[in-house]
Every structure is written in structure tokens, then in C-alpha cells.
Image 1 (cartoon, rainbow, N blue to C red):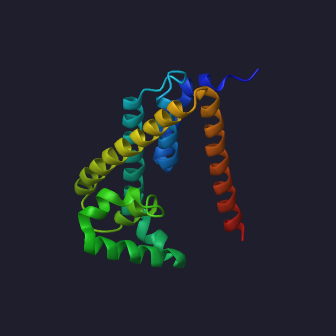
Image 2: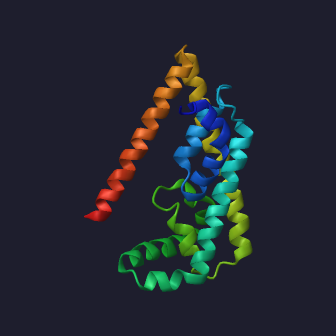
Amino acid sequence: MFPSLEYVIQTYGYAALFLGTFLEGETILLVAGFLAQSPVYGLDLHLVIATAFCGSLCGDQFAFYIGRFKGKQFINKREKWKARVGTVHRMLSRYHEILILSFRFFYGLRNLTPFILGTTDISGKKFFLLNAIGALVWAIIFGYCGFFFGKVVQEVLHDVHNAELIILGIVIGVLLLFWLRKVWRKKK
């Protein structure tokens, strides 16, 4: 017999959140914040935010140091990346600290920017400090957005548990469609 969704979230929720925010983040953090408003799933909003902060910070630091040690070689071998790298470098020259603090809020820059920043002369300490501040602000904002969205759904719908399952199913379905679309585009 399959374990219940509640059991899976209670058992693996924080680990899945850490992994999800290490790799990407926004959607899984919104879902975790949404689920934290319900006592059924056993997620604490403050632990959700702390886990997302740690996952995001670790993922971006990892990408930064991969960029630091292998980034230039990687970029030189990929013509498609050179335009993106140029965009990030131009943004960096204009908005230096602001870019590091805010890149995770811009779709399409979230995963690429720390890697590219690793290829620049930015010190590891400076990147870490600004990245930590940005990750904390991001985790708080997205965690609370998901939480308050869950509260609104709870007030509007009386049978919240069924609504949560439907919304969770829709979110997972949409994510699956985006992933399939991405895979299909790569094959083209």
C-alpha cells in the first residue's frame, strides 16, 4: 500500500524543499509555504523559510564555485552561452551589488547568474555575504506568500484539505508540463 500524501510530506518535506531550493526554488517554496498553513502536513513556516534559505544559499554558492573553477572553460566551449554571459556581465557592471542581491527574483537568471559571477573577479566573501542576504529575503517573501495564499484558500473554501490536494495536484501537473516542454525543446 502507498503511504499517504501527509506522511510523505511530514517525512520528506524539508528534504525535498532543501533539494528543490538548491536546484531552483520558487515553486517548491510557494507550495511548502502553502502547506505550512495547514496542521495536517506538519510543516512549520519558520522551518520552511530556514530550509529554503539554506537550500538556496548552498545551491548558489555551489554554482558560484563551479563557475570560479571551471566556468571559463565551459563558457568558451558553448557559443549559445556567450550572449547570456555578456548580458549578466553588463548587468553586473551597472548594478553590481543589486544584481547579486536580487538575481534569484528574476526568472531565467536564477540558476545561471551565480555560475557566471564565479567567472568574474568578485571575491568569494563578498558573494557569500550578498548571496546570504538575498537568499534570506527571498525565502521570507516566497515562504510567506505561499503561507498567506493558503490562508486565503482556507477562508474561501471550507473543505480545505480537498482544496489543498487539488491545488497541489494542479501545481505538480503544471510543473510536469513545463518540464516536459523543456525536455521536448531540448530534443528539437
